[in-house]
Amino acid sequence: MASINRIVMSKSSRTWIRALGPEGLDTAEISGSSGKNFPFRSYKVFHYPEYDICAAPLGEQEGTGRQFDLIMADQVWEHLDRPYAATKHVLASLKPGGFFWLAVPFFVPLHAAPVDNSRWSARGLKNLLIECGFAEEDIVADQWGNRWAGMRNVVGPFPPVYYPETDRLDNEEDFPVCAWALAQKAEPADVD
Image 1 (cartoon, helix red, strand yellow):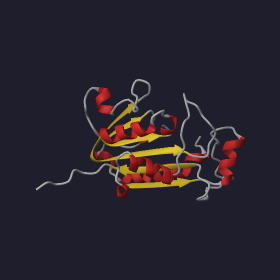
Image 2 (cartoon, one colour; image 1 turned 90 degrees about the horizontal axis):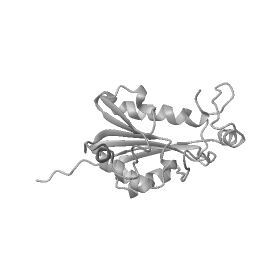
Image 3 (tube, one colour; image 1 turned 135 degrees about the vertical axis):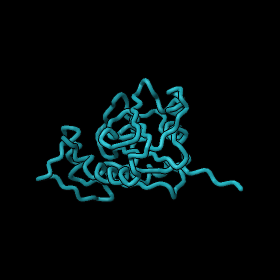
Image 4 (cartoon, helix red, strand yellow; image 1 turned 120 degrees about the horizontal axis):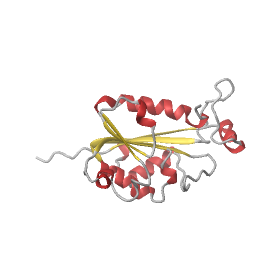
């Protein structure tokens, strides 16, 4: 069953990824399975601890040096000890013009799997991506949440199951429960 925390984020993110033309994308996912339902040209999951995005770019860890058109990370970045290093490694793992999609919680309980370190709003995600080398104009970020979902997170059980008959999906901008972003790696400038 779906969690109320992910309903709006999932719908928005599917729209963003479909607009990229998944059939033409070589895709990597970091410790997740959100991409399994898209018809990507190729799709590989890099699971921790065999692959640690904090340690090196994905192609380097794989021993191939390959780069990807899209890298996905759904509910992973909050668990990383070195999210800035990891984001820089994602940038190095992307082909020029490639995309990085990530989604993170904001107002949810501590959920150590194995650790829980960070929280970002949409603005925070955008700032993280800028500081790690993505151009501000090549980033879209959004967030969703409301006090009802926040209360469901606190009262438990976690994560709260979504009940369409009773759960509100209105967005209170000042009460984010989750945030997500899509950033594009710059194409190299033409040199004449």
